[in-house]
Length: 66
Image 1 (cartoon, rainbow, N blue to C red):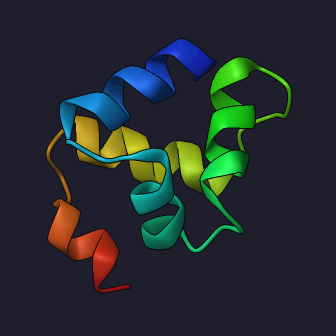
Image 2 (image 1 turned 180 degrees about the horizontal axis):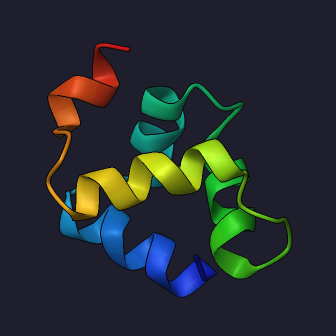
């Protein structure tokens, strides 16, 4: 998954960087922004969650309830 794909999916589901960080249980929105800028690799589990959201296999509520 490219940083642009990741950001596009985040936008499509209405997440702020901070909101997605909370849902994925990562340190902060800054981490999300670094992934999207290509400054850090996007971890595999985060990529899987975003692809599942994109394909509507899981919902926003599902990831927030993990």
